[in-house]
Image (tube, rainbow, N blue to C red; front, side, top):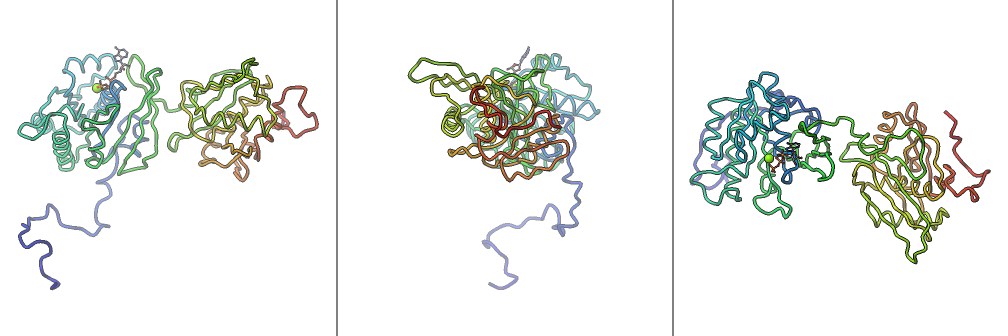
Length: 434
Ligand SMILES: Nc1ncnc2c1ncn2[C@@H]1O[C@H](COP(=O)(O)OP(=O)(O)OP(=O)(O)O)[C@@H](O)[C@H]1O
Ligand SMILES: [Mg+2]
């Protein structure tokens, strides 16, 4: 091919470029600078704030609180005097107004429109020239003249593409609500993930007010951050320090509890494991777990029995997390072992400490990811002692990190054996020590 021959099929039509290609170093950085949304926990997940022209999809199951969160974001954005447009395609303006009254989201520059037609939504954007658009939800907007059923794949793609174009042209940040159904079928956000810049999933537990926002895709920041919120009667509240949610506040040490630091994404969270051990006459004593994986707990119980001489075969064992936390992080293994050993011995250890480490089948304590971050979180919360896997090499002011090689060693250190089996000369932590 001659060097100057046009590339591509000879019939391709050329059009004028929208802007000249620039050396990459000449592209101004501020065009991708982010602005705080006014909600710290959301900023954290977004990677500092929202970028002009970015389209963010917030996906979640029905009733989790998507509208509540985005109305709150819109109100905080508008509180700075910025024109903000909230388009509701699912609820009437009066319904949204009612929610705004309940959640204290009435602002002078927060504009509300109830529209279900894409053309009308675009007209509102042209008329108002907002600095932020919230659309609730992308599946409820229809395109007249386009193929497919409203909410179906073709229409949702059309709506999203149009909004992405407008967002880029106007450098308008857009927050879209997307529905996910349990079976994930009808035009689920999966289809939209390629089209938008950021995908956030909004998760919650039916039985608690806790809500987590995670980024599963982020073109502007890390995709493993987690934001914590709490749903209350007066709306959604950010929880900047969630560690207290998963622990019980107690002044006195109690047998059968252990603290650990789990990770949600890259965020360390203090979590508590509680255990109850009771005598059983049954051939197969009960083992019940809440918030933890039953299989994992069984392994830890077997390790305790065989490798650390904690007798459980004739006992019922109940193990649970606090605050409805679901802990699947293997780093919590050691705390499960210590909670059960402490419950079996009816012996509480007297100094607040966190236990970190995965437990292997031979009873060894294995290294876990993010150990420095976890220990640093414990130190921040005022803990001065941590049991950590061998080779962790933690040196942190005010924190004593004791490396334990095996579950048995940890049980011995804390003297978690029934009184008659405790070895007074064995290794143990001098708990009064500073
Ligand atoms: N009057 C109220 N008092 C207290 N809490 C309320 C009240 N009304 C709604 N809620 C809470 O808000 C939640 C619904 O929030 P929201 O409407 O923001 O969810 P959503 O994710 O937008 O739901 P949908 O998928 O149906 O649009 C309810 O599950 C409830 O917990
Ligand atoms: Mg809603």
